[in-house]
Length: 483
Image (cartoon, rainbow, N blue to C red):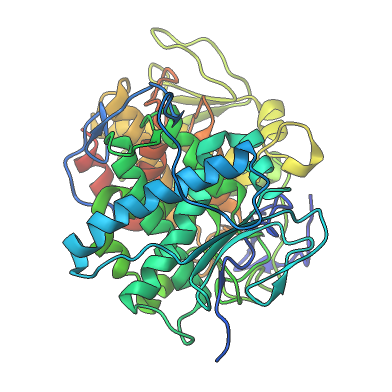
């Protein structure tokens, strides 16, 4: 936990909530190589995600389906290369139909597939040595897609399952789509290319979830959660600016782009441009990670930071004439409510109870190995219980799936009030919103839970509700949508 340059700001202390990179930013550091010469406004449903029923069935390769006839140069003939070739085949089948239908353009399959082992003797692919290149990429120079079967694919498969490999290759073929549309050139920033490619991957995975892919299947509950977890894993580090060469985006921004594609179709992806990125992206520009004069880093969850948190919560959720909830330093039983930890809300007494020790554990830097998620995750869980108090003041029910989603949305509103430049005593730092994504993709999310801790099993839906609130920056849209 780091504190830097303490100073008073307008008679208060300004804190910057700290984000943490997981040391995987090198993966997919530059996945497009060029050789020199908002979800839709669909009515919300507790049983659906982006219009599809939430399912919990099988995800992964279909059993008993013949393998593709595609060949990858350099392949060792192993299982991971077979998985990759089948993935490319399905993605290309999708775009063969979809590109003409949406853009009136023909999709020609990529010219070449290349498999290499980054742990072995280096070869040359796209004018780059493959030695130590833990990556997958599209090369515009020879219209090829290459992947590392030595370290990248095994890491993805072991950590998240075979669909993680499919996700990475769907992203790379999204770059092939860009070049076939003529939508990018040397002047296009990396972040625009990568946001579009994440969005195009979302297009493909909706097609898979609808049951159309020959080789793969995907549930919209746990299966889709694993895809989003993959995007979290391969996000940019907190010290990477969105304007850096090779920038892909933090987890929040990558998941947002994927969700646009999954919910809104390829035309939405093609509209992502420099203006949108600069308006929507939450990743700071290079050199703007930590404003001068603020206490930066991963804050400890203690009395000082909790007092600062209360100030921001009053600004976000305070309502004229409404009684502000009392704060208890313990989580106590509450009539007719299942108590949640490490924070709870008791409607009968209008009290938010806190298990400070457990909040401190959750708020620790993930790299410390104590099972923590980071300071923002801990503070957001507290904010979610205050969001319930606001709902009670407005006369909304505090149980049920609509309440859980409304709570996530309102917590996103609170997060929007503490972005840098808003003058809040607590301010977001790079990586903070990624901590919220990690919390909402976990099996149990308090950010997206009702008063009893219940919520929707779809991490996709939870993150979408939080993003709704963060984008709106005010409570009314959350109260209107999630009813």
